[in-house]
Each structure stands twice: as structure tokens, then as C-alpha cells.
Length: 117
Image 1 (cartoon, rainbow, N blue to C red):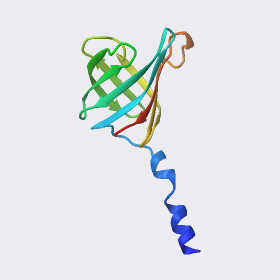
Image 2 (image 1 turned 45 degrees about the horizontal axis):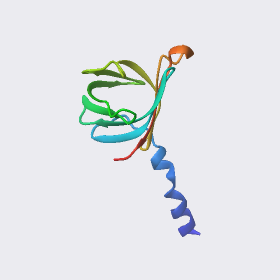
Image 3 (image 1 turned 90 degrees about the horizontal axis):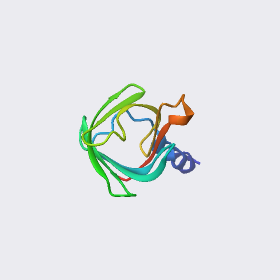
């Protein structure tokens, strides 16, 4: 019986534990806005810098970011793709879901990411 209880304590709950820091992590998933849907890789290098790669055309850009409460603010160096404030809908050890302009369906953008490192 005690082995069963021990095994139940080692569930996937740790993977769904909320996090408040993305420093030195890599993520892969999709970027979607009303005009496009494409695969994306995002790397958060440190507490304020990172870069992304769009798989559809291998576009790459560096960004600065500021994680504050339930929002993350991106400022890209060359493109405006991620620029602005994104609302954090989910941020766990393995999943991130971010939305920009979630209250305006015709201009909403979504990042749906899975952790790869």
C-alpha cells in the first residue's frame, strides 16, 4: 500500500506546476494571428533577452522581454511580430500559452509553446 501511495505522489503534477521564470529555457510551438499560423522556436537567454525563429521562412529576431505578474512584454529588435504586452494564460514547467489583444477577436495573436529545454 505504501508503494502505491509513493508512486501516486510522483505524478505529472510537477510538469503542470506554475512557474514565474523562463530564464535559460527553449520552447517550440505555434504563433497564430488572424493572418498567419506558423511554427516558432523561442529561446529566453537570460532574465531580459532572447530570440525567436519562425519555421515558415526561417525569420529570426532578437528581443528584450519583461515578465511581470500575469503579463510579458516583448520588444523585438528588427520585426514587430511579438512587440507589445502578452497576457499569460498558462505558464507551467512544460507549457506556455500567451495571448495578445485577447478581447478583440479580429486582432488576437496566440503563442502556444511546449518546453524543449
